[in-house]
Amino acid sequence: MLLDLFSPWGAFGTLLALISAAHVYSLCVIRLQKRSLPGPFGLPLLGNLLQLFPHRKHMLLYLSTLEERYGPLFAFNMPGYGRTIVINRPEWLEHMRKNEGTTYGKGDFILSIFQEFPGGDSAFGSEGAKWRFSRKVMKPIFVAATFDRDVSYCMNEVTLTAREALENAAKEGLIINFNDFCGRLSLEVFCKMALDYDMRLLTADASTLMEQHPLMKSLSILSEATSGRLFNPWWRFIEKFDGVSSQFTSARAEFFNVIEEVVQQRKSAGKDLKENHDFLSALLRNGQVQDPALLRDTLVTLLFAAKDNTQNSLAWSLYELSRSPVWLKKLRQEALSNGAPTQGVQYSNLESYPIHLAVFYETLRLWPGVPKNSRVALKDDMLPAIPEEGYGPVRVSRGEYLLWSDYSMMRSEHVWGPDAREFNPARHLDADGLFVKPPHPKFHSFGSGPRLCPGAQLAAYEFVAFWCSVLLWFDLVPVDDMTRLPADALTVTMRDPLMVKVVMRSPSTVPDH
Image (cartoon, rainbow, N blue to C red):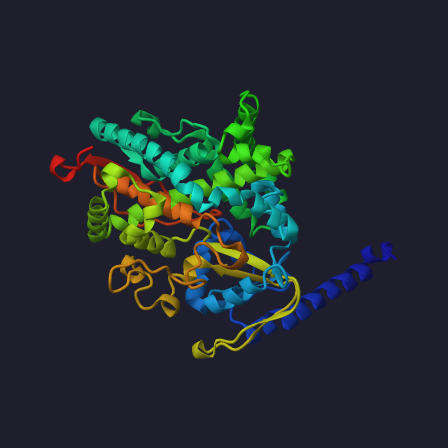
């Protein structure tokens, strides 16, 4: 029978069968897609592969282009994935989040990618009981009671070093990459706070800022490579030829080596772990965290998330503030009125900085931490109708993906009003000037539901503390006015360097030290 396939008539029959199958696919899938949901037309068997694959490394912006054409609800097909439904409305997102873990999950394909980085025992690379345990392990670091004792102390210590570096950069006339600077600061704070470890990423020597630190480069490679794999079902094969696999492996090894060095140094320090109150010591004391892979993946996740959350919010806020100087003035006035320059910012006083918080949340509305994400349907489901927007119920079949872009949704006029694309922190302040936290999932920068980011308050505190420590002493002036775009990474990392000139402010405007 097998040999018959290679006879002239057998080959012809096989070809005819393939053509027939392609035709049936076209009729049953692509035309059905046209009738049920809008979206780009695909080809038999290939679906929308030829349209999407060239954009796999910049899908975030391509998804925005597709939404402009088809609206917040559309679908496309990819070999290896089947149908993906884009759901850029908070109503559908809320429904999915409420049913996460039962009706929706990450799925084996996505989990296999995150098992490479940040790791199979991380919150990214696990689900169910394993995910819940991962969150439980990380929980102590986000207990607010420890913020004033640990976070505030470390933040104030590192920001003093940051000010020295900026002052020296100003005196030496150096143009620095503010995006990289913020990444260094974020990692330094977290390592001091959680690991009681000095990475020496940020020193008073401004000349060290002129070259990218190897660890920062490694994290960028890992994030961008992982993101690119999410829309490439053949990434294991293709990366053997495009160099990404070797870059990824080297970057991961370097990052893992840093983690291993920190852990081994703590273990061999000869100190009783009970005497140390940092998170790493608590982990090493925890009898449930004896698996080296679990310990490593937990630290990898925390370091990666801590760096990117704060780095991105600070870099994008400067980009927006430099185009809205009135808000820079408001931030300086608020910092001065609260005595932040001389007393520092305590976490317990965070609510005294409503303007800073409004700027923080508005920055994250336009530049959300995880700008795109997806889940796979574990069983058949129906998304709710939104009659006021003209949408009826949406059928989702088992195995289909739901994809959303917080980046697109939170810039939508249908969700945030006619000024949705404008930077306007006032939308988060009430008539009395008090900060009003935007509701979930309309505001989805920290996620919602069970997977709500536990580091939201920590990121907000670090944002406020940094700007209060810096803005009264320096003007950070971008050297160009180019439009900034996000890299296609796991987080909303700025694609190009944000080069700034550091200018000391007039002595009359600088408070006494």
